[in-house]
Length: 312
Image (cartoon, rainbow, N blue to C red; front, top):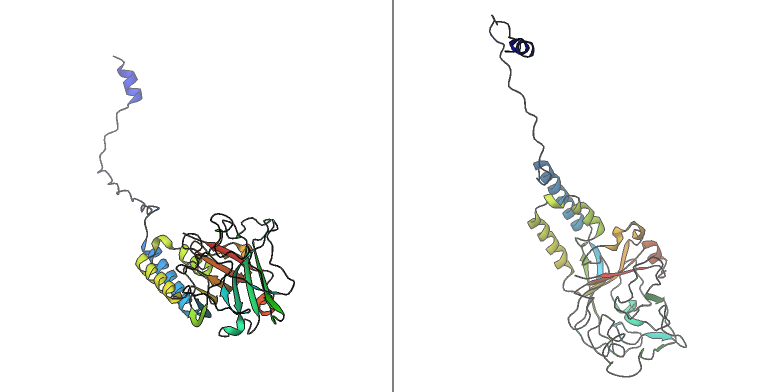
């Protein structure tokens, strides 16, 4: 039944007298490598990037004056270098004020005549860094936010006097803000500074220096992390045992602030301060840096400086 319909839909094939032509096996296209797979080409590129970063770090050592602070009280010298304590000020001058009209605390006072001379940096004069007393130690995050730090440099500090304690003559400050909103770890930081010992060394950039980090970040997944860790350890150990430095390179716990193109002009490390047991700590074992442009440093202009710190 309905055989004629079946013949129309499924006609019989004509009888084939010649041997069938064999069909070639289909050629399968190569499968692309999974996105997370590291190919040999990626590995070679990463090894080359690590070699370049290592070469850059070894070839670009910069001289620095190294700071060491063991908690010894600073000598009672008006123009002496010290961490914290009372600054020397021109007679009838006052401490710098923050945006709310409150005095800032002295972070560090450096007398260049007391330390080894570093090429490009002043040979004489007094450099002082002041910071706002708050939970961010004066760091500002917004472009329109008032800076919470101040720098003063005097090439010939004559007629200076010792500033009165920022909170009066009390030896012990009451607990709580704003008295504890400084990175210092000793109670009478407002009246007594800590001694700084100076030495010299050549420093490499840290692994988080924006120039080195850019090389490594581009190939991070494919890098041999054993080699990366060894390079990081070398860079870290080259900074030890100091607790800070003038010149050289700064260290960063998280990232170099010059990753932001707006900060690219600050190409020179003016000052770096890290952890010193029972003396200073930036948050959770952080690092602080002051960067300046080489042009401003050469002109001894300290009114445009990048202040930054971060921690774990």
